[in-house]
Length: 600
Image (cartoon, rainbow, N blue to C red; front, side):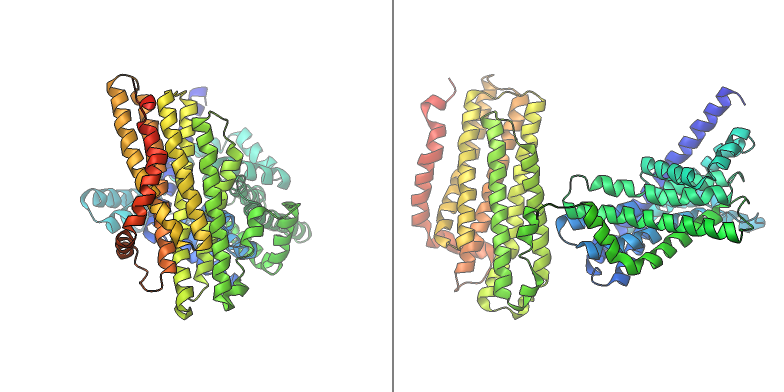
């Protein structure tokens, strides 16, 4: 074979690998779409029972066709505080079982030749039938459910086409001495494990690396002695993505990723020791025989099921090992705070609700700090502390998830009237404070864009943003104070200031248009300017919502209905609100309208 022939085979192989990846992605995305949010809810719901956790991990992985995807999801749950380490370990174990489904599907045509009509059912032929059915139906159907099913069918078809293409590219190499020597070398268990781990880590998919091994096995050049260490290495390599996803997360999320790694590493070492010991004493008759695609799939399944059964009783030891690996010299701030959300307080709901209250107040303080950090960067041109900002934002997200989860454990039907009001206030307020944090994050994105694009605002624009930002910071501060103390009188200030911030936004938009028309501002500068004042105005809206929740909580005479209550508040406090509105107009709006800030 000449160089051009090898190049053609390489192109064909990687093209087949690309089709394989696309088919797997299409199929798993459609399956996940069909399952919807039930996947995540299933994982969250079964974490109290280890056997249900294993089953859930296996089923979810079988559906989304990715143990990595399931494990990354679990790392996210642990990072958000929804799931504890001892709850996550079962799902991680189950994910390793679920990932074996792909290899079993790919091995369907491992048998001998089929005659007549049965030959049409071989995946190498069936794939084209599936593609035809899926593509034609998808073209004519407008129903979402039918379209999703068609995407699944197309995905399976592409999976088999990719596999067949890879097999066709590898097959001509089977007689080459170098190809045969490579798989002889891989009989070395250490080398086989390293190769399997590295390839899987690069591809970010154990299913894809198993598919490549099955394609190579179709040539007859791969023995059981070479294939088994590679399979065990693939189980180790699949841990890389979960470790990678945990790098920016908290310590518990890192520990969840390490549980995945230790589970696969210990399992591989145990299996390799057992297999080679038995083979040395007894001798497997199949050891040097060529492995088939079904042989690879069956060993992959046997390995993962056996390791799960062996390590399941020692799961707490694996968790302890992960905790020792990722040590914490002192308790992290979020762990300290969120530790107060103790399920033991469920017996005294008033105490449990007060703990939620403390966490949400801290969320508000963090959101305010993030707004101040970004505004200093935009207005004062100070370098933003990105690490601090990200830490705050992650903390806010963790708090929201943990509070929402904690609230589920409180039986709101048995609460007293005052506790029922507190429960409803907390349930609404936690999302509003998280939204304020999200808009602070949007401001940070605008700051990053301004720096990267070297956008320079005019002095007038900087002044205007500064005034509106000061108003936004004050309304957040008032909101945190009102929520912390349950002080409905502060809400009148919040409502008045929110109206002034709305007026500020419209005024600044008009002034911006005037600058554009006068040629004193460009569209490049104008878009981030408008985005910044929009985000500040939305922050004020969420503060107003929280203010209403505080007033509804303190008002025992009216029902907790946001829309109706807003009307009642507006009518009852119109005079006092007008006084505060006049105060804030003088404090903020008049600064924008002063002659020395108007464009000349």
